[in-house]
Amino acid sequence: MSHSAHKLVLASTSSYRRELLARLQIPFEVAAPEVDESALAGESPGATAERLAEAKARDVGMRFPNALVIGSDQIAYNAGGRFGKPGTRDKAAAQLRAMSGGSIFFHTGLCLFNTATGNVQLRGIPVEVGFRTLTEAEIQRYLDREDALNCAGSAKSEGLGIALMRYLRGDDPNALIGLPLIALCDMLRAEGMTVP
Image 1 (cartoon, rainbow, N blue to C red):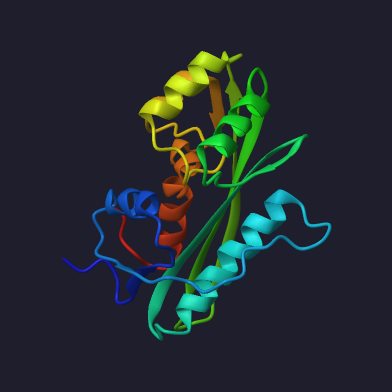
Image 2: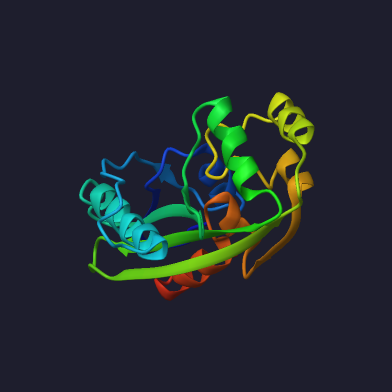
């Protein structure tokens, strides 16, 4: 069954985004974008996420002349600053201590680039996450059991990280994992793709 005349391409090497996109049961390819992910001076977290999502889609789109290319980027932040992928256990523990008892926003930028027409759809999807007050023992037990070093904010809602949270507020729970499927389905339909 053909969903569209266009090839669908995910401009990401994230296994989380691949797994989410596979839920739509549309064949797709994966290509790695080559984009500097640094924030610009004075740029808000939401603006950074949306700019990078579009940059990723455009970068990969140069390799696919008749495709719908999906770019996505996520920035985690609160009043204390931005939270990237920790990379080390010590940094993950520090992030979790900083978020304990408070809330953090995950702003996901989503871009769909039609390389045949040049049409770009771009959206920002925020999710607010409230954290319980965490003890040091809870933080260490969590890090013993969950590989959260490659996850912005160190708390994987699709895994054990859900036990650290008080609430999730947003329009699409998939946005927190990195690919807002509700918005993406709207974008794909606007480009003539049949979903489901």
